[in-house]
Image (cartoon, rainbow, N blue to C red; front, top):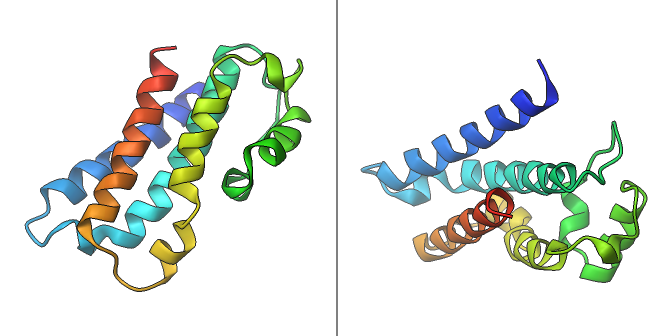
Length: 138
């Protein structure tokens, strides 16, 4: 399977989980942990896809979801080892990293902790959709 196909399949799977959660008659909360994991996975692949679109992502490089909950400057330092140009020259990356941070910052609490409100889950989904839209329409 080509990498582009793998990324497309992963994003499709994330979108399917979002759709399933939003349509579930039992409510979005019954998908809390799956949403947390799916969004985290999707964020990583969207950022990788963005860097590939910009033609700066090194072959075989990977983004770690744990990086995305760090301060933006620290994330950029980590990403700088995986791109072929100075990270400061990647237009639009800051906005994507800010969205990724908002999604990732409390991922573990959502994935492993107590039940959170549907409002929190909807906010995370909306942030993900904004990130996805930003990557696709850049």
